[in-house]
Length: 590
Image 1 (tube, rainbow, N blue to C red):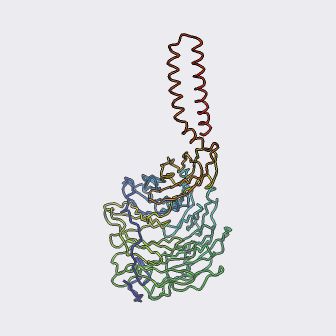
Image 2 (image 1 turned 135 degrees about the vertical axis):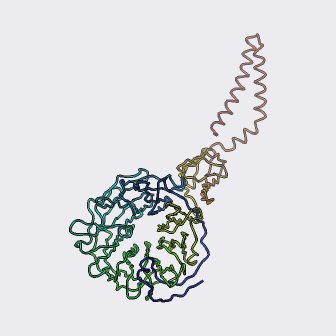
Image 3 (image 1 turned 90 degrees about the horizontal axis):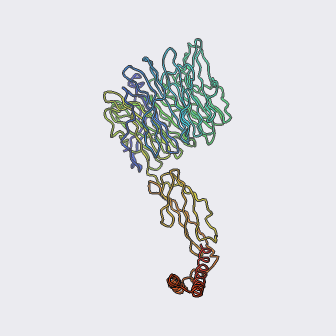
């Protein structure tokens, strides 16, 4: 069903502040192939879990981090890691905060090889931001202290990890006289810089709010925040490929506090985008600005939509510059969840993914480099996800927590990487329990298959060895004959050749049934052509010689004459010589 975009007057800014959105038209599509796993409870046996955050890598590894408390209460940063071969690991603790001092707002990102960076806030005499890094094949590093922070929740600081394993962490630091927007940089293989980049410093009387940041694979980066004095300034600073941060620029006056500021990077062009919510009595609209040659454009309403009761907006951009903005809009008596895409300087017509909702938690959104997107939010007690694919549009929102007990009306986190969607959320049934739901499209990719030998070759040996590597878990056969494969995917086999041209077909099959095939053409040049046939022709004579030899042995056993014995031995020697000659040829053949 399509829902036409409409404009409505404001109901109450207080109500809008709680939920919020921007309007869109709606079209539903047939579901993507694939299925949700129903959810997996990950929590340890503590008292209460909250603040889940998820990430994935392109190699199939995944991680969920969250905070748990016990009855004391003490607070603990926990994680569970997933690999395609082992599934979810038993939850482990990364850090703790004892004596009733709270920990909260963990975030995590993963590189393409499965390394990860985790950050969190710990409260006490002073509030600090901390981080730990996980290096694939090595494990967890030590805790790093990023210093005192005034960023009190996940909407006020941001960790971003790129595919190379580099990271930035942006937050509001402060001391007794001033506060600053500080950005720490992590270099894969060497660690965090000794000091952060300070983008803006203001007196304590001036507020800095809602710091967000993003890092691209090219090492470009950007940060956006609000500087609040007598105005509500939307500020942004960008970093070049060389690692140089530019001076902060004011994009607009948003007219109110805005925790929804977002920034994206088009790595294909080096341009940037900022989105934010702007209060224009009596409406709250979503605005954006983009760079052109490094110059920020005049702010405009996203998709041209104005006069909307929209407060909560969320934007993500892929490396090719395609962005999706998801908003929530109050239209009495319910809420709509809307989405619109930006590509090549144009916005698509807004689409309503869901309408007339009576209960709604902030949508989270993810996008991949193919332009596929996924949005997760809670409708009353159900955690749902809608998936977008080009040509099909948005699917109907589908519950993803079939196996979870209790209400999933909570904040969540979402990641979309390599045909896999991962959602983290809370299921409340007396206490909060951390859950993760996984959607994986059918695996249609052939396994890797590397052969060490040339695909065309000649040999004068009758046995030919094939060695190679495939992906772990795959099976291999050669001309239908099974081959042993190691846990790391290595294999080898000896194949008997026939004289002339031999076609050796190597097939690797993964756990999903996909296969990869390589054919080797091996020509066997027989050094003694026809020997086997000639030996076959003389088999009768050889058999007769064997009978004569046996008879001679019997006679030797009973002979008494020395002369006769030597005569018989001469015959036996002749027979043995003939048999030895035949065997010698056979060995040369082999």
